[in-house]
View (tube, rainbow, N blue to C red):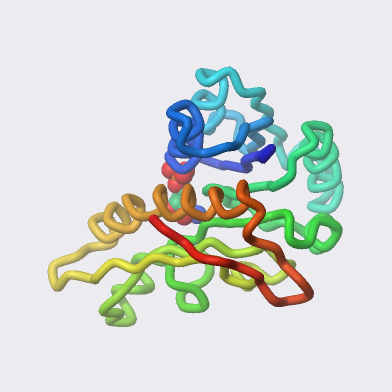
Length: 203
Ligand code: GRF
């Protein structure tokens, strides 16, 4: 499975993918890492693993569509089977997303459809949620609204703040993302119309 990763920041999910591949725990190859932020730690992690890494700055492009077109042109050059948004903080426009239906996934730190968008851990606390977690979903033009493939839950503790809760969720994101990628690597997940065909998951 040829994977391109989009990341804006720290890149711990990217690192989990790279480590799993290095250990032989995921039959895949990261063919490129792409960012909208030149200083993203994710780029350094990619280069340290010998993976080509590229940052494009949105301010150098006329508008979102121009940025997206250029970015996805560069992504397409790496011939990925799957494009993984792992902490990519920029909206993807409908044009590039619709052309790649079923080939872009995102990991989002909430139990979707609850708590879309930003500051999901604070949203969960503010809403008095007893459970929180992370979801991997297909990307569509609707923000955090595409079909959910897998998710994993953690309990919310009485004394949690957003940081503590984020840490507990992140610890689960990595195995969740890897388990999901193994399903793709085995050819076990596809998107038909709006239905996901999926056969089994083990974390
Ligand atoms: C993760 O919580 C991911 O779900 C969210 O942004 C965070 C990225 O973390 N979308 P990292 O950059 O992979 O460390």
